[in-house]
Amino acid sequence: MMSYRSAWNDFPQCILCGRCLEVCPLFKLTAQEEISPRGKAFLLQNMSLHDIRTRDASRLASLCTGCARCVSVCPQKINLPLRISTLKAAHPLWKDWIWSRLILNRTFFLPLLRLGGHLLPGSNPLAKTFAAFSSKGTAPLFKLRNTPKLKPEKSVLFPGCMGKYLRPHLEQKAHSMLSSLGLDLLPTPGWQCCGFPLGQAGLLGHDALCMQTNLKIWKDMGRPSVYVFCATCLHGLTSRQDLGGETLDLKHFVRSVVSISEMIPGLNLEKVSGAEKPDLIWHQPCHGPADTGRLLQDALFIHGLSLAVHQDHCCGLGGAFRLQSPKLSLRVARSLWQSIAPHQDSLCLTDCAGCIVQLCSTRPSGVRVSHWLELI
Ligand code: SF4
Ligand code: SF4
Image 1 (cartoon, protein in one colour):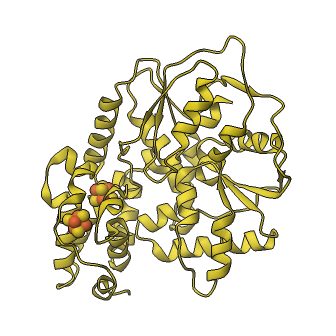
Image 2: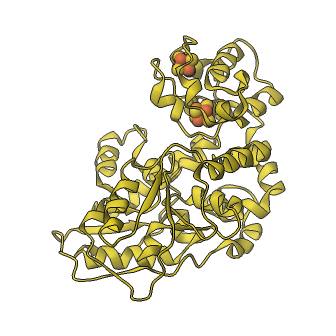
């Protein structure tokens, strides 16, 4: 078992400056110092002096959405979500604990469960009912027409859990879009999870295993460009710094991963005649590229549609956070919807599988939630 004390020694120390307080969605909502990033960093530093006890570890680890807003402002470069994952990984009972929560909350988490289901004992029977959570999404507003072609290059899609389980029609949409741009798409192989949800849940060995398998698949395919349409997959596939002895290959792989949202400015869209003109909202995923909302806003503006971009709100899912602290998770989501104040028939767009699950399950009546690809 990994020692949390030795893991802690590799981390920088909190200087209690408090810069993280104003960006943390949980502190903004509750004003409780003990669940602020500063409070958790202080507690974790002191915990390193003692044996980790189940109750302490579970409580601390549960109170973070993993949004990483505190990481971006911390002068000490403290990565609190990583620190919490390390704590979970070091905890001898963590896997049992999180599994019990997965079972207890299965009606909400089955779609995500199947993503890593093969890694968790006995999950497959439960995963069978995942289909109940699939959604048809929204009717397209646009079709593609004579899109200028890119330089042909060997490419492949990484559909992630969203394309595989949540909204399978998105993989076909992404495929059509990239083909129309002239890309030479290889058949989608049996990718593993991007690793991010597993790492966040403290299953650090499993996330590395997934990445190793994905790296081998990519090398066997001749190192194509990898197109991703989930913000969290993009983050999961590109944020890993090392993988044992495969550092060079990993760097090359990370450079080959492309967000499909980068293609938005090159699309030649034509409005579907008679299509609705909904009130459009963009929800920015915590781990996604910051400019996707703006790119989409520009593309829609040409067609007389406005998109209200909301950058500053976490949806409150946070992977295991929803399992561990469902009430607090729902409070974060309600706070997001209150800030956005959507109309009754608003269409909220985003590009993260986890955000879609959380927003769908907490949306005000009449509001729809879609991936932006569903506009096409
Ligand atoms: S990752 Fe987000 S929720 Fe967690 S402590 Fe940092 S700012 Fe707060
Ligand atoms: S910003 Fe970093 S150093 Fe400052 S209080 Fe927060 S965690 Fe500590």
